[in-house]
Image 1: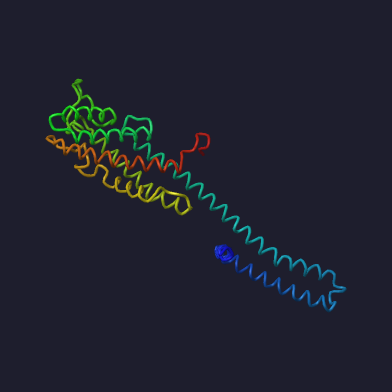
Image 2: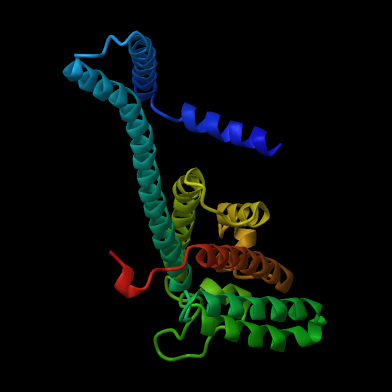
Amino acid sequence: MAQQGRVTRARRWWTSTPLLIRRFSISLILLGVALVGVGLRLDYTNWWDGHGFLVNLVSSLTSLCFGVPTALLVLSHLGNAQTDARHTRRAREFASQEIHEFQQVLVTAFRVNDITELSDRVRSLQLELRELGRQPNPERAEATNLFLSGFYALARNAGGPPAGGTSLPHAWAGVGSIGRQWGRVRTWQVQVQSQWRLLSEEVRPRVIDCGLPWVARALTTEAEQAARVFLSEDRRNPWRLPANARDSVGITAMGHFLGDLQALCATSEALAALYPEPETGQRR
């Protein structure tokens, strides 16, 4: 089995050599074998006696016939290995840069310092939202106001004091009712989807072609689905709720949004673990 594996690797190594180098190497080796045979034959008959210069010339030519193919084969593969290493390094740097950019886009819409803080805050809101859904109607109004106050504190474009300093709205329709929140969020939505598309369609194929890792298929599929439907429908978009939206509608829309955002955050964290951002001194 081990011998078969070595034969397979040798065959793969040979077939990966450029065709021109293979043909040239085979021609020189055949010529070298022929020169060796002729030299041994003439040596047996003592023909070389008195032909010292010719002996040196044929010996040098025979050495070249074996040495040049060896050098060509070794150097060609060393060159290929160097090229592959350079492509791999560039793919890794490209992935690191774009993953970091994706994380920056995600956190832009929130009052957080980094993606880890955003992911933690989103998970907390998801837990609060589940508890809110279990509340009976008479007690849900206060719990809804408390939840939305936390959401307004997190999101930059989800409610805020209007001109005149009146209090924040504490109703589901209030998430997008003040000023031009949805216009700003719409811009952020496009940025998130565009940056994910770049990761999925450009970064991922490039790193896989270089033999570099990517996140698990399940995580990738979840993020693909989340990016595709991210704030794309009113029932998944807390900024597009009607003025008379019921609590169940608001909770459903917020749940979809937080779930999609959490999927994107989790995938970005997993990717950043594979391709961490380079130190400032290491950036080129």
